[in-house]
Amino acid sequence: MAARIIDLCDALVTKITAAWPGGLTAPDEAKRAYVAPLPLDRATPVTGRRVWVFPAPYEDEAATRGEKNRAFELSVIVAERYAVQAAAESDEARAWFDARVEFVEVVYDALDFGQRTRNGLLAVGDRRLWTQSSRCETYDGEHLAGKKLFVSSIDLTLREIW
Amino acid sequence: MAAAAGVKPGIDGALYRNTGTYGSPTWTEVTLVKDVTPRRQWDMQEAGSRETKAKLMAKTRIDVGAQAVVRTDCANAGYQALYDASNSSSSLLDMLILDGPLTQEGAAGVRGHFNVNSTGAPQEADGIIYETFDLAPGWSSEGYPSAIDVGSGSAITAVAY
Image 1 (cartoon, rainbow over the protein chains, first blue to last red):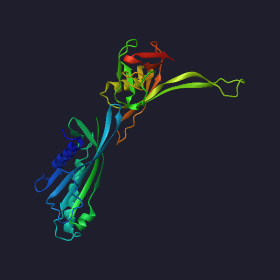
Image 2: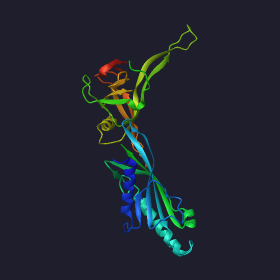
Image 3: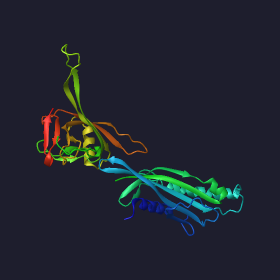
Image 4: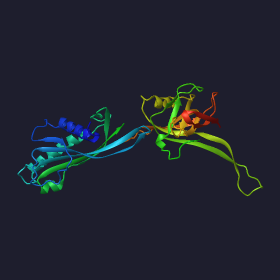
């Protein structure tokens, strides 16, 4: 049995893969990772659209005298090499950026779990989790302008009682 | 109260309801309890005189009860018993409120027939619903509220107030 936090990362990868517009095909990829690949530079071999899911801290508080309310923090990074030849401020480049921002929003929405939200609760093993909070950094301007990379990150907190 | 010395974690406290009879109780723990705040506070009246300049007080009656915060779960029998009692204008629950489990020698608390009153169950968007129940003793022909000491072998000693 893997660590719970690893199971959660894998569950998010599954959800992201399922939500991938048009289906995920190589060289695009979604996977669990440990080592943050940032900062990326021009030499970093990023081909296709990459989505990495990272485990982050988790903590408990008492839910009842016999149960814990556990909060898991997880991070998702989306990265893709800026493939447009036109200047970054051009309409062509903006359309390319728009498509990536739209993708990030699809991923963000796919990770919204709750009893009554669009995706329902996230079932992992015999327990179910909900998204307590989530935050998206739409894009990283430094990577975009200086390193020709579109990079976006999502930080979220999932909770479960067990 | 006899027991080994040491700290008593609040999480080891136990709130039981009697699912048997008063004379032969079956104590079933309400497992979804988060926090319990028991109270055993006497009313005090002045009982001084010119004999002394010290203000003397005397205990008259005691307020025995508790406030219990319980996670809402309609499939849990313990929560449901509290919920049902809180909706009733007359039903009392025979309960045992201890600072440790029944298996722990030295655990102490009170037993009584309690009115159950719900004082709130906030439904916050980011929260989990917990219901706060106030337990206040009511009259029962079966017995009055008692101070409880748990001895060895889970033996209970009750002293009525």
